[in-house]
Image 1 (tube, rainbow, N blue to C red):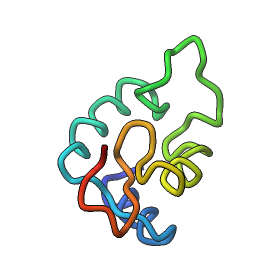
Image 2 (tube, rainbow, N blue to C red):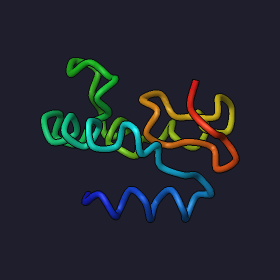
Image 3 (cartoon, rainbow, N blue to C red):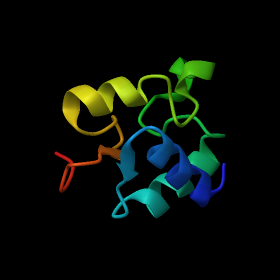
Image 4 (cartoon, rainbow, N blue to C red):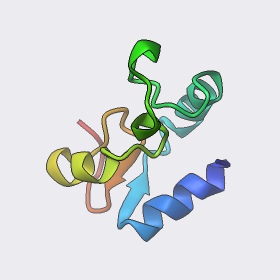
Length: 79
């Protein structure tokens, strides 16, 4: 995915992008073949491809996804 695709995904799912970390996360995603950089390689599955299947649930519950790329729209900043 390209950078603008993450912004589009966030908008379509009523979230926003954490612009403080996006470039760093995208760099890591290029290294991890698109898998969430917070998940060890030994645990990679299709579920961990960013945006992972846990993203929306984590944002709803915690206000941000595990790696802080996606934030709840009304959130000022991630925890």
